[in-house]
Image 1 (cartoon, rainbow, N blue to C red):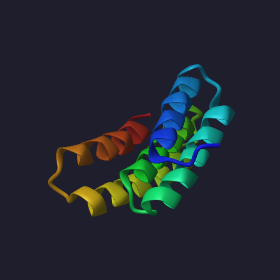
Image 2: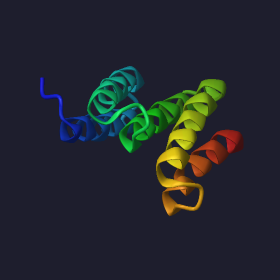
Image 3: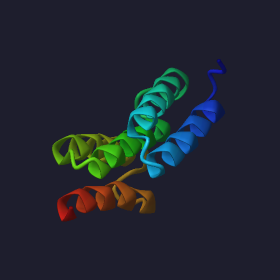
Image 4: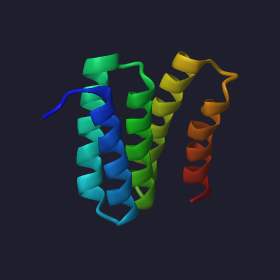
Length: 104
């Protein structure tokens, strides 16, 4: 299996599709596989890892597992802020995901 950042982004896209179809278990597996690749290639503080955490958080939110969803969205937020800074526009997404959990 290819261990590149591009392959990991492909896994994220497939995981999103599986999540949208309701195949949550398979989606989480792919998110975790992508996270492993991102960590190996780019380090634990990378946007790929943040996106993987975000995806897992969205799966948990869809399943009504709000405590777990918040945990993963907080991890995504922390990494995103460390990588991009507090004022970057892309920091809005993890904040929005946290808000969506509280709204549910």
